Length: 532
Image (cartoon, rainbow, N blue to C red; front, side):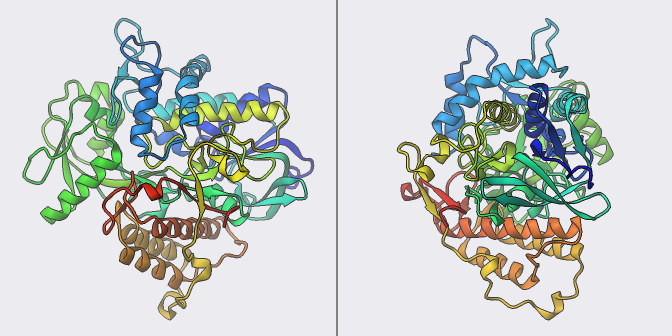
């Protein structure tokens, strides 16, 4: 590790998903010294778990980027940044073609044309898949191979602890090396591309590594972050003890699978946006006094051929989709908010950039449109690389950064006001004092699942906050990666609870039981960091 920190890199990328590796490959090819830090192996990221595909308009006559933009804005429930969404849909097709040129292989029709599917919230079939439901794995494979060929340094099993901030902005990060020894990695630019925070919850589709590390680092450094209350729950996760929950791709519903209640009745439009389907499922399950619904895929032909990854997972669970309905329930899936950036990925801290799920570019608003996440990583990862290569270090007054920089246009931003666990009033309970790190992580997840799930209330949020405060999770520098992950989960949980308590309305993936309607007073971003 000491050799890694001996001389500053041009760029240090934290994370190894589609966004981070897109940045790394581009800047390394441009001749810059680039390091990639990942706490697992380079190929382990949430990207490889992504089944839904990549949404992009690739010249189909009945589709257009205007339609893709309209679908994204509708799903985002009034909180999308229109300029950022326009960039996403206009630049997306070019990024897909570039990925294909790197060697990514997408599904094709017998004629040789790319096979396009329709998913929830999309008005047209525009979703590309690889191996039926192994899209993320194929995207990751292509980028990992390119990264190994081009990066200056790849630091695997290296845990990022905190941002290092100097007089001129970012200076690097502090880390725990593979041997647990503290060190520092210096760089002129740092790109946070560390993914989401699904491990806040007991039931999630995210891998164990998704502990909100980059977002927590930014929050502790006072960098502006927003929209953290908007956690998307995927409606069709397999109701099964396996964790992460096996995901039954949106593509199944796009091909005709039906959602049924405990009586076998269809109760929701399967192609509605995810927030609508998940909330309807929760209400239906509560009314029926059950913990799951059913996905009926018995009418889908050639299931194992079209969806080999899902078929294999179902076989391991002892389920046959051709003859039996599949038990499903919502699971935490995607964090729409994150570190605020301009349309080129620059944050409020000079030299610090963010891309992918850790970032809040404004493209998702209050609810992400299906299959826009891989596309976001590809599009805005490329924009980060281009901006760094051009010599920039500071954010511009574009996208969701406009109100923070005093510019007109876009949605207003307000400062978060609610208490967080750093201002705890609940003393640590004596019976929790002796819990080990794993037990505290489980207790945190249980509290978040019970109090900050698909439907929240003032009482449930307060209960979750009290439970977290009582755990007494320390905010000091961690001595191990396990403790670091726990600290990060606690940091993000506090920010999420704060924003969810502030937002007294229901909008997108944030549903308040006592405020069931959307309130235009809350058509704004709740910012923690620079404005707080």
